Length: 227
Image (tube, rainbow, N blue to C red; front, side, top):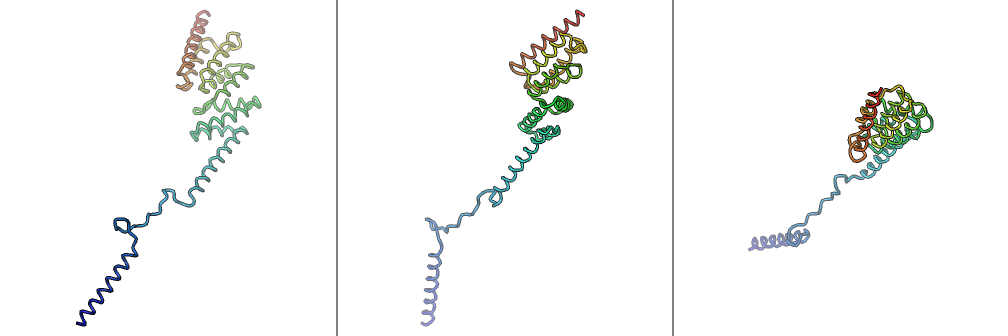
């Protein structure tokens, strides 16, 4: 009898403990235990992530400003550095800065033109080509004419190239480019035409340039035959 009473008492204690534990465990509506949601804010859940991004952006801006300052001071290597970044906007800004520097003195312009024309990678732009066309007119010769037409082609602007072509043709007609025969001048115009970027040779302006170049070739060919 005593054993039965002890066993019943222990069973009562076990049941009470089970009820107590069950009440202490949170559960959802279906009676299943609710697990706490994991704390995860993404791949960049690091206290210093924002700071790191800001530092990188500041470095890029600082490097850009340093390069442009070099260009404004006449450092021609700044153009090569800008080109190596493959950033068209940065390259354009660096070249614009160098063109401003080139406007100050004729020697600066000559240095920039020589640097660009002797490179196999660098391109010119419309302001540089137009500046060179105007200064070239004061003392044209064979070398400067070739360089002027080449820079105009490197500007990748069909209208600018046509302007260079017309300027050279006009001075040749007036006898100021006697260093060129009609055949040589035509050859110069045609060879440099293919230096222009393909996309600049397409479209309405590109077609007009091609048609004008054909007319110039016919004119120069006629002159050659007449002589």
